[in-house]
Length: 126
Image (cartoon, rainbow, N blue to C red):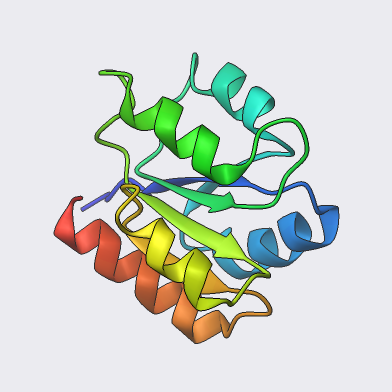
């Protein structure tokens, strides 16, 4: 049985983070990357990922604005979003889930925590 890999779109302005997450996930998932929200929306014209991993602190358009735009568009509202952020404050965590995010992971993150969160979110089909 040939099972199609789930796809993940990683949006982060740090090439180090893009490289790290790509190395961690590319054997299990089809991975797409974007360095900012603008590039992410361009990619979404051609792909529909099963999950988006989204940095909060980015130039031009932060993760909250990106999520707001995703959730307001019928074509993308059903794609689950997990925030990845260096801001581990309670304020960011408490703002993420009510804004429509399916999860929240602080950087630096445990690779196992990231994998477990992705599996949990994809299994729920949020």
